[in-house]
Length: 455
Image 1 (cartoon, rainbow, N blue to C red):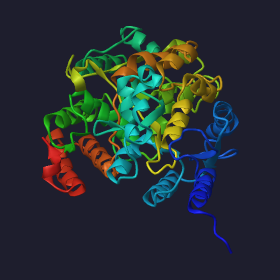
Image 2: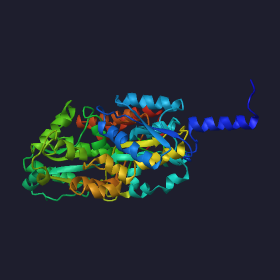
Image 3: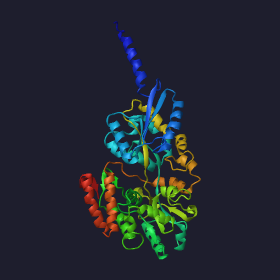
Image 4: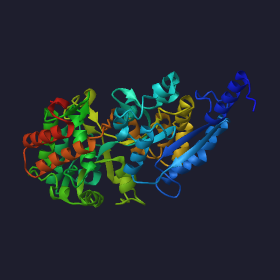
């Protein structure tokens, strides 16, 4: 059999390569396939997200990129199972081009080399994206690890202090309340107690409350005392900020009668606190905006309050003292959320970035909300869709610019449990110093010794 000449053979090979693998650089000169992976599936887990990707993102992106075919790789499994699946794909240098990740996984995946900074994958155009100007710097932190941007944040939330205006009026407190310090919260709690309020302050504590203790309680207090649980590659140990945060727990639960210690130990304690707030038995409660939109929502809430809009106020969480919070802030918060990252092993990294940026455009974000009042990562979208809900607009305007996020490293869950145990110790009667010292000992065992701990 006669073989083709060398130039002809090279031409055939090049044509086959372009047909089967795309251009590799994302020039759009031939057919390219991109894949999106998310832990969502139509008719199952996170169905709305799956529908948005399949019914809006894919057809709209393909309209403007006629030579690109986008596929959706949906899952409807346990979060840890999804995480393992994605990690195995990336470890073997396979998987989807655009991938959904929980923000808490970013650091872990980055340290393992499974993901790389967006600019290293998507190129110089990443920094020129118009969306960066619409995402508050603090919110960008959801996708940042060690100062580098690994992912684009999706929707997020914020922690505030909710309070019952009716109980405040009974205690002679203002209907519009914004504490400027921790002392202001304790003082308000004392007046509520004097007025006969059963539980003046509900601050999640102990291990029964789980991550709600850490996110709604300890971490905002730590931020208000000027520290983050993990920064600069080191964990905060038994330093003064932690002792201050635990000291606030002692003021609430150490015999003052401002909080209910037993409630913190019950398996359904958080749910009970929701019901008690709705029944007018709790004066001040630290929670995320989830509490407003899903718990005490007047019609379909878990613990609906028919008069929510009139009876419930909300305020930013103050630093211990004005200017004493992280970054010198007067007020602080904590947020959670998910991100989307690029697969560093994508055969079409530039086009993958185009798809990722498109998924986080204003038009795509509004399409995903589908008319719902939900907080997005984009200021321009929030300004448009949250006008009908002043509380959610308050979170977007006042809280997101000052928020912080949990460290996305593998051992965080163990550290979080240790922090919960420290609050439980204080609720049970141990001093803040004793609880902090015990936490330090546990922390050293988790993170590999005192060399990885500051303070």
